[in-house]
Image 1: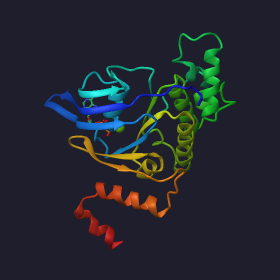
Image 2: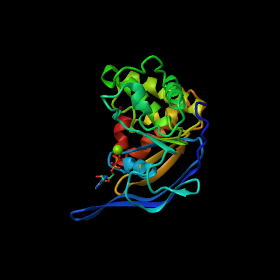
Image 3: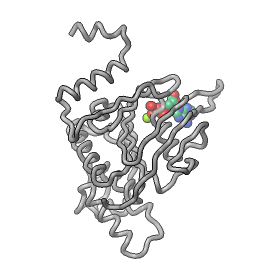
Image 4: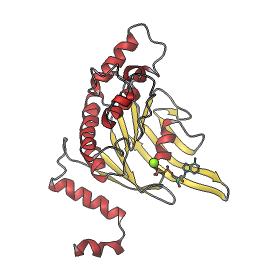
Length: 261
Ligand SMILES: Nc1ncnc2c1ncn2[C@@H]1O[C@H](COP(=O)(O)OP(=O)(O)O)[C@@H](O)[C@H]1O
Ligand SMILES: [Mg+2]
């Protein structure tokens, strides 16, 4: 483990979030109940607009208000904190800073040498030793996301929130990054909450797959994935879970089509 920080249990109870709009209000999340254990890897899937990003932003402390309970250990989440890191679909690196400066950006108040050590260790962790002095435009998409992961982990948060982090990568780079995040999780034991629209990615990575439904956004079902890692995407058990999750997404009426092919 690079850091040594151990997180707390994340408890979400009766979470409700609505936004004011011209015609009244839009309910983004309704009655979300979810407890995420320390060190667990949770994958969240759901149609576009069902509230996945809203949920992650609330956990990250980036939303102004919500109803219900969202707490990490015994602390109610009411703003951003170093105990939570976040990675977005876009890397959001500062283009005028080098890779190491980007990773070091949020590290303050450390004794001399400590900052450099943490940055070096986290660049090693994401496999970017040797790229410390380059600028973001010199990196491939996958490498830029590795830097974003290093930047999110350098404060040694107990919880890492990932909002479709590999969504913009090509298929092979994406698989490589899934293997990377798994390796990092196994080393760091950081609690991971990953939002994805890729069902295979969710089954490959998650201890549990949380399926959300829309209008209003809520948890429809939670599917445990009791398969040893690394998982074989072509195994019978994996395909069975994929079938189960697909069935949640497609209504009865659409199934005859599946039988016809
Ligand atoms: N700041 C906002 N103001 C108004 N509506 C919002 C805002 N953010 C999100 N929404 C609405 O909340 C719902 C969920 O959005 P979001 O969390 O981005 O969904 P997802 O990430 O699952 O695609 C959508 O209907 C969206 O239009
Ligand atoms: Mg989103």
